[in-house]
Amino acid sequence: MSDNETSDDAALLAELDLLLADPSLWAEPDTTLEDRVVAAIAAEAAPSSTSSTSDYFIHAQPSRARRWFSVAGAAAVGAAAAAVLTVAVTRDSDEPADATVAMVGTDLAPGVDGEAEFTTVSSGVQIVLRIPGLPRRDGGDFYQVWLKNCESTELVPAGSFHELDDAIAWAGVDPADYPLITVTREQVAPPKDPLQGSSGEVVVAGALGECPA
Amino acid sequence: MPPVASLDAATVQAFCRGDEGAVRTVYRQFSGLVYSIGMRVLGDRGLAEEATQQTFVQAWRHASSFDSARELAPWLATIARRVAIDIHRREARRPSSSLDDARADDPALVTLPANVATAWEAGQVRHALERLPEGEREVVRMQHLEGLSHTEIAEQLGIPVGTVKSRSFRAHSTLARALAYLREDVE
Image (cartoon, rainbow over all chains, first blue to last red; front, top):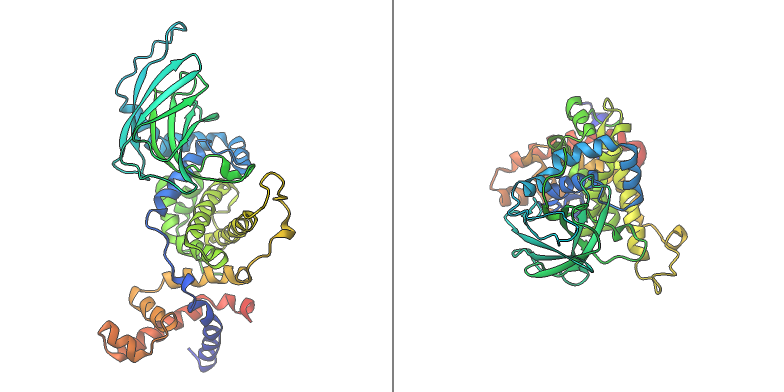
């Protein structure tokens, strides 16, 4: 390195000194962020988000969305589907749909498990959730329960909660048409804000039977 | 010109295809760059993490339009800056007196923080720092962030002053070479 180059280096580093002295330059993100990013992409690809850009992407690249759902999204939903405790559903229109589904924690809630009990009554489907171990969420943070169809193209909200140790969710759809159940972490947001949709941060998931491949 | 890509083309292409392993590899390689841009613009860890997550999701969404022969860092940095600005605008709008009546899409209502101007450079510096050997990066951090002298650094690390000086020289030389392409931007 010549003297001129050394001088240029020093000048450059002097100019960058303010940046190097800024604590934000050295800050590290939370160690769980990597898993959250992976989970968000998986959930995004399984078109659960209601944001306009998400809709655009899903419509533009449906094959990729399905591939991600089968590969990454299946880590949550597929694992739960394999662990279904009981599927005692007789889809006779005269009978209520009663089933108990195993709920399995994703990478965002490792080790958490529980169950969801489905009972169809005239006003809708009642879902009793018993999922201990999830930390309580308050102050504008909450859990949201969703039902999804097998194609993950339609998402139905089933209630928001502080905790899910013993909670009752309701949905006005037929669980046979929306057999996937997920719980996401959410935050209060203004009307029309994209945050009103699913955050994609699925913490627990289950499936009322298997979806077609 | 930015430095040559440190990720192989196969990994970049796998990221574009949406391979989870490649997503993790890209995250580990570039999360510092993306996160530092979020921190620079937003100044809040939680919001910067949100910006980081959104950046990687958006990058994946639009990966099909990315030329895998190009450098990934500037592309991610551009997305990260845009995402951080969007989040800043959203946060600036939150204290609205009427949620239903708020003109949420009026950009004139939001003033961007001064740090936005140097956010891209901050990301590039962070990316260069992360490619330094751990021992050299630590010396740079103590020197610039904590304002310590070579002697003080040597005492804290329990190593000879000469070793601190040589690490500092190598680190700064490496940074100067890696970041020379920024010079016209910071002058």
